[in-house]
Length: 238
Image (cartoon, rainbow, N blue to C red):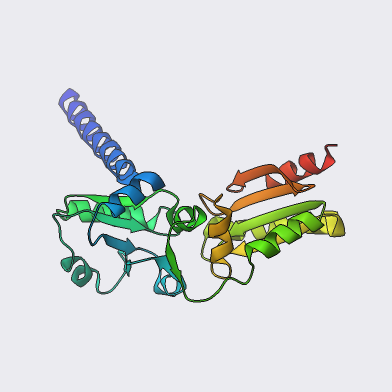
């Protein structure tokens, strides 16, 4: 009986060690924008992989990137084209698919594989060079005009492919119903207006919500949090 318990304890310890090791390895592959950009700039022909879906990639992407992920039918053929001795840079809408991809590349013997913290939101949101297949519907000048002409403005910046961004929509509807014309709500999506997101140089993740009062930023929220309560508190303050 004691021998069985001892064996079970060892098995549990090994499993725990494996899980922790895996988590730490994944975490270490995710780097900040500054590190990611610096490493790319140091490469003559950087190997950049956009791990989003093809419908997302065609709208906008980092210059020089190719598009595939773990679910791509030609995944094995795509990674066979890469040089295992050189760094590989991955990104997605946030840091999900790109992290899994970078981790898998390391398991397959690649020397270095990095995932971008905050994904394409962080890249474009900080003004790094990118490709877009169309002009932004909203310009920075138009954005500034909206802010200057309205006392209270709530700006929602995200993407239609971002899961957390979809959860913001019903909350915005509730806020809109409560405040009506007293609060201007501006919704900006990466697919429609990437350039204004780049020009603002303030977005690190999707969704990002910014509340302006008399032209000044009252708060900037990354992610959902308690958005409704934060808006109520900010707008009730003198």
